[in-house]
Length: 308
Image (cartoon, rainbow, N blue to C red; front, top):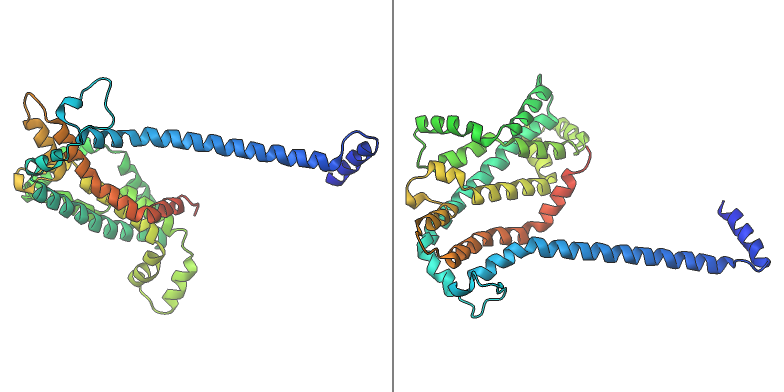
């Protein structure tokens, strides 16, 4: 077809109609222009969306550094002048920062440990082992994701109260050791992509199922496990409702709970700059975690999207 076109165009060129080389050059030039235009539109769209999504964080940082007289100024002042670093220093004792940060980290890391261990083991069982009722139980497990937390909140509270776990970290950490349906689903989908020949070779060499899970499957699933660990940390760090329900002693409060208590205790004139400073400090560990793990996070999200 291409040869026929060239012959026809060449014939027309001989008759002084269309030169073939000029036609190809113009076609190539128009293709490059379309690609450049497409890249320009894509960059413009990405920059616009980045500014929109980053603006709340910028506003948070800006407000946390403003004097009180500039917080509700109209038109709003984006860059504070002067910059009041004292807002961060003043809010530290109000939040009992050292105690609440330690409590938040204990709960977050406990949830990471429990979630990674239990969810990966259950996912391995669903993905790599054959046992009666496996698929039915997996569907039942997925259906639990449809149940809102508000429905199970009161029965779970009664159970933990009977166990005497109220005002301890146990209700916030122990359930993570029982697995999470979403994380199990995520890990199972990735475990299915690992060739079964590796497991069969390990079994021939005498490796147990636990050994295959630990020595073969987990090392090949580092990116996906990292995604699960990051999600679990964010869930534990940002959790507000759980600590509000189960923790009464102020010495066991988390940072989110202390921030809410500081806001509730302020009757009349509210220290918005202090609240914004506390909120900004609460986001710092999340930003640090993302910058150090963004490669594994993006890679894990990409890989878990592959078809088995």
